[in-house]
Length: 383
Image 1 (tube, rainbow, N blue to C red):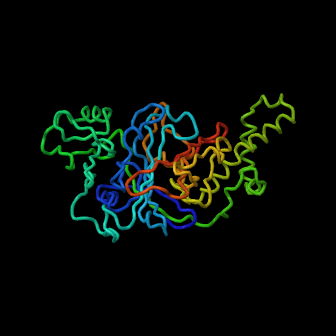
Image 2: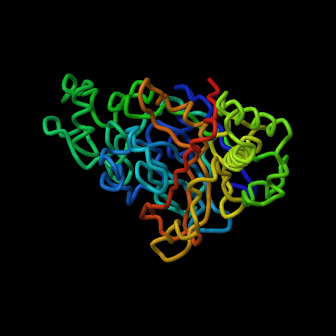
Image 3: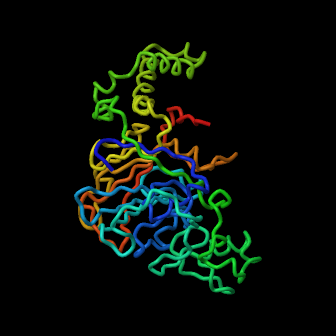
């Protein structure tokens, strides 16, 4: 990716577009199964279990983010996984229901040709693989490492007992052992739109952010200059919201108390207003990418990580901001329900500043979840 802030947008991907989302085309994508980059050292089920409920996390998204000038990262992708359990998202902060891994390869490697892939579609459909060229088998349900096999046909692969039981209930009991149910056939996996475990699949299109705002517009929320940028209209709306929230009972409050309440509300919502203003030109953005450059934009003054909250990489190097996942992405995940649903304000990914590791491993990085403030208005849905 180039310098400056780059934005990611979800683009519908029909069956005719499926080929672009396979590993050989180095995609950035949301949902479906992961299009693994390196074929060695894939994270196992232990690393992919939710730290709260211990259920397997689902693949959320991947970004293709090579580093210019780094021979060992000519190809480089980041993979984010998220638990499907809504209750696991109640607490903000690090990890928990989320995790992120990094894979990278030099230009000359065992898996891909040195020249870019063709831009024309292949002659026939390209189904998600049941087995990698390295020999590693993939789970029929989630597309992650599948060391476990069906005890009857010994061909269907699974990451663990949970997905083996799920696949058995959804139809493998009827097709087990049939020729069309082999692990590398089109019938070996269920399309993301038909699968209740996978998130819907989209291509992520990357575009540079138009320079309508100065690079320091996400500066320290206590900076007076940042506060001065708030529009008069926003201030009037804020005053109206504060006065409305106090209702008729406000008549019994003295002027000093009312001023204190108004000041508190203004301070509490200032960052959220800055957030909305920054994304107003492109409200559908689901990704903001800027490795080591401009930092994330926050949705609240609450739960912003301090430097000591972001652990160093296992190699000892510090981690730097690489990208953030925006709340608008939730509109594409089909997670709304009458009860609880997966929710966040923003997810922020930090990666090793030295970009350590080699082509035979997936390095776990750090992800931080920030929620909306209890006093701010939730980011509106586009639907």
